[in-house]
Length: 390
Image (cartoon, rainbow, N blue to C red; front, side, top):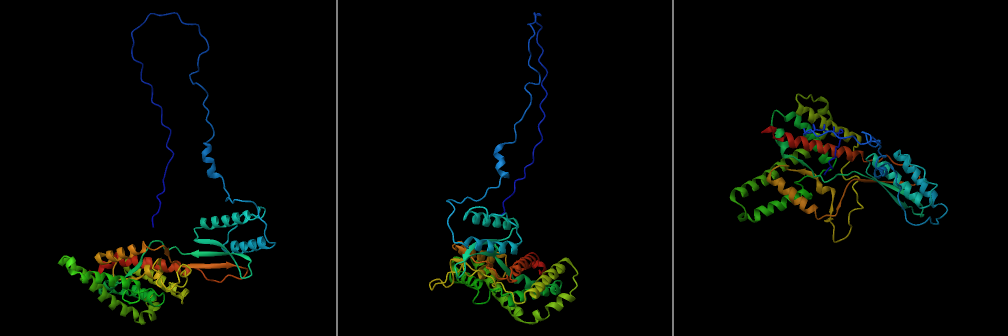
């Protein structure tokens, strides 16, 4: 994701005026009679005065309310009350205190109230969108859609570096914590694995292999051998690691391993921190998986588009992969990005709350926030320390 660079401007100090140069020497001239002395101009000139600050900047301190064309309209007797009843429940739930807009004419007061609530929520950096709705009886109510923004990120967890760490006696014990973390992500959080035939990443690897092996004459011999070697390594190590992740012993001894582990270096401390985050997430959300709050309203349910080719579903940008370096991954990411550029929608975790007077449940996006943070930390340590086994 691109972040705008903030301009840092400082007020510059007033420059000093240069001293006047000495007057050039001139030849003497005869003295002449002085003119009669009258009113002379003062050396200081006109008294210094400055106007107020530029009026053009005054609008920055003005609070503009939303504009709504038209005149107040007639409404049913209870419609405005239904709106403000639901609006009060929403504000109370999120802990915001907007200004009172009841004195404004309908529907302008409703527009101002929604604008005010959205502004307060955005100020807290909350990804919440307030929408109007109606219940089965036609009564007006409000819904809030909470979204976890995954951004333009591929959450691909590499397993080849983890295999190397497990083979090295210097990092083997600490890497077992990462192995248990990956087992949790695979079994409980339901992260797709790239050697599963049903996974999207497996389909991408198969296309790359077919592209390489079906036209060997299009490649130089050295490139052809290197590319096939990377594909074979990814498949071979992928199946080895999948068998290890499938073994339930890593989940059974996860807590015991974390409690007894004593780190001896910074790498081991990082592994322990990641494992503790994963274990805490599992304990707080024992049934939590990555698709629990996946937005299903964005999917197109028709017979001709069963796989939602024009939507980036969550299984397409989350999963285990072989590596995140080298020719194979560069080709994979290029294929994925080219396909994503043709999509118009992206599926993300969304939680919808309806403020109709019933008590709100305890559901939240806490699991998703912690899960994606965990995946990000895990990818970082595997991508930066995966070559320690060499």
